[in-house]
Image (cartoon, rainbow, N blue to C red; front, side, top):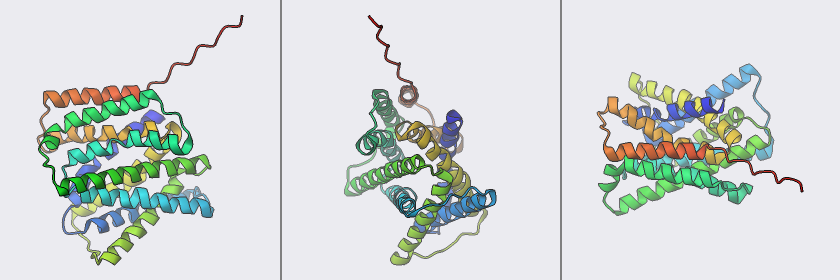
Length: 297
């Protein structure tokens, strides 16, 4: 079950970049993200109500959902979308892949989880591998104020993503399912994005073309309803440290799709980077050997 959820998350999030690219145009970024999560929340609430699986949340759980919505479905996306205006997607992917290390550190600080050496080593290998995969983009990026601002926003987005992971883990430990908490979190995220649009005077335009509507549906249902539910279920089952290795693998899926969609060509350094990413994956999911039981004298 865990493997199926893991592969599903990687495959879905490895393809959402196509839909995000199709969304770029006349509709403001904040409005597009608000539409995405408003639609995703509506679908989740409808499914939960029809199936009788909507859980009741107390005030504490609602507050956590509110903060989770702010971190995972609002600030996180605004940071990455804005950063993409100043730095290449490869650099954003490398920074986002540090979520594995941030999740391990935050789980240690807040939940007292022991940091597994294999998770740290695997995360470091994955980060190095992504660096090689996107080296042409990284090497060609000039050091400027915009670059530093883009890096800072990407790091803030990654930290918000990590915080959302830990909040979901906290909710699941209290017996709440990701379907319910995601529904509320996405609703709160959409409302906060709408508020940002109103404060900034951002118009709520809409593009009724098949390109925009199709990409919105893909991002809302597979990308958000299925992708986030599968991923956050993994966070509850495997822990935030191991689940976050998805952030290393889905850029690899995106690159493979780019071979056919955009003519991307594999190079020797990129192939070596891919090997490091896969070795990191093996390390992250390797089960530690049990300590030998001492024999009685």
